[in-house]
Amino acid sequence: MSDKKSSFKKSRIYVVLFALVTALVFSVLITSAATMLKERQLENMALDKKTNLLEAAGLVPEDKKPTPEDIKQIYDAHIREVHVDPRGRIVETPAGNSLQLYLIHTDQKVQGYIVPISTRGLWGKIHGYLAFEQDGETVAGFSVYSHSETPGLGGEIESNWFQENFEGKKILNASNQLVSVGIAKGKVENLPEKLQDHYVDGISGATLTGRYLSEGLEETLTKYESVSVIFRQKKGSQTNLETILDE
Image (cartoon, rainbow, N blue to C red; front, side):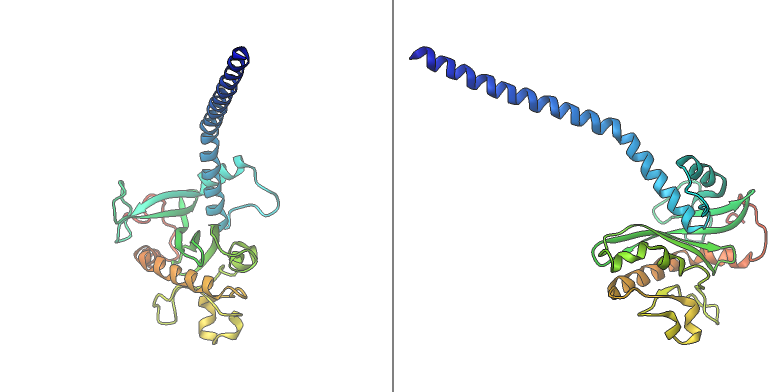
């Protein structure tokens, strides 16, 4: 009888030891996998950021799907990341009140700029990029890379039809006052003609998403107005990349 009890105890010990060893092995494997994949994850995040910046700037080829190497080459050739102070001047070391900005350039000549968008949505933050032409008032493109909006409703903010509506819109009214770009409740064509240049078509069933995005765009563009003013003052000039915001 004692032999059976002893054998049973040993079996239980073996089972517990096996479970512990198995858990330890899998923990090591999972940790190792996470560590090895971390670099790949960071690379993918950087690539996604560059892709969305290029999409906002209209620099992603439409005739073919670009490879990661294509994206990197186009980005390095046409996008420069800088930080600016409240006056819109480039600073060497980012400070608490500095703003992130992306300059669009070709052959070292500035063609426009991109501002990052981070605003409230219905269910979470909306993150994207808004690009401008060199005149400092005309929208060149818009892209959304992260949001928590409802698929088929507010989630349409990431669709091509919605983002393409931003191209050519103006952030200044007839009196050269900043009015931003808003999302209409319905079709832009139903608005008074004097407002149509400053709105894009709304999304059916997503009124709150449109309202929050409109508010976020206005708040962001107000912060970056000093940058836009500098570009307006240099409208039409082929300004060098190194001096556009330094003078």
